[in-house]
Image (tube, rainbow, N blue to C red; front, side):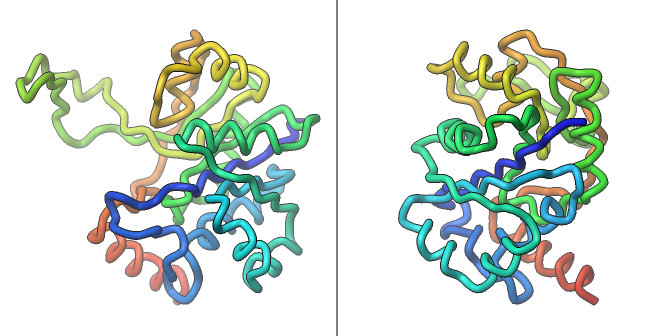
Length: 227
């Protein structure tokens, strides 16, 4: 049976959103609380490593809501790095040495289902890793300098989500093999190292809150979930 560490990177500055959305209240609780809860409830998750800006570490540890959810499952706080991949690596390095799977999830995806977390982890029995993704509904263009180079086959195009679960030793090797590569998800590192990554059908509600209109949609969903 796998021992799994959930890594939740949350050190972003929210440049596209206009503020640090991870600390913004959504239906009475900070966004990060909504995101952590399914990982707290999952019986497959042994620990959670929450990666935040160094300036936020003390405030989070001393907050009442953190102390409350930390009673349910061990939650460690790691300091973020300058890039997402640096933050994730900091989180992995703080995880339990004996844990063999890491399950990485964007803090800005607060509506992931516990069942999908578990399915992603379960796929690691047969693959080097697995990610959630949904089929592309739009036609996707490959563009260079504002000019279309080619149109991709939509039937073979998927939009990546998180969580993304990997064998920890293989992901650490992928980090080491690609230190100078800047990526937006860990699956890319694994792909560059020749890993076999399984696609798990995701959920349209598991969207990433990136801009203000996403936040308005999140308020509606959070309200519906609460009622």
